[in-house]
Length: 332
Image 1: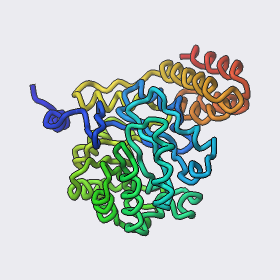
Image 2: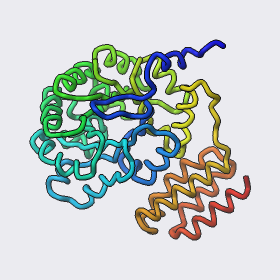
Image 3: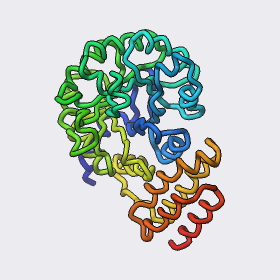
């Protein structure tokens, strides 16, 4: 039997991946996304095969000033392997807060050096750091020296030009155990097509693992990124919104198995399970509000989704929302 090329790619490698001293069971990760990758969402994605999950962004200054809301975002109990992602631009503060981060026992600490959001970048954090590669190196060195677990970083192609290779090499020289690369500049935000060539160039220059990120919408996209860039792992972001099955599909494609898409009933049943966990984790009022965007993603493209979406966004209690979704499920 002829073995597909992408399967041969993994037969030549171990499907598991080691980052520093952390052993990961597979090479398909859930990206950190502010306001999205909370505990309920991470748990759902883990069930469908995510090899590692990341917390939402954690403010180093928030931890420094003992902000309780900031600390609450780090609860990753029972989620190993997991990474807590921190952001900031002051090396001393970034290093100082590591003991507080380690109270939550992450397997990896990740530094956000790629967030394009104005409220982050305008303070000199996130993607703004790519304008000063030397500062990126000092931050990485300070955190790596202070951390008992591997430290990684997530970067972009650059601020408004391609400086990813330069920045990634500086990070490696200063103790980074792996680097994730999103193939867009900060100025591009999430528009246009991600540049996978930059991921390929970074991979060619580094000896540490490189994680590819950007435009992974299907199992085929992930396979193509692995093959084209030679990256060691892929990081799924927006493609997982309302679609945690994507992790299972990527793993099946890697194994040479047929990719199975969820039917409408399964999509709705998982959506309901997701909402239930949100309510349990955050309480009814907050959970319902946060559930609305997830439901919109789960039902996107289904028959009658516009009408049910309009209805759902008016609901403010769990019993009514559950009833509405169950009625919608019955139609399938």
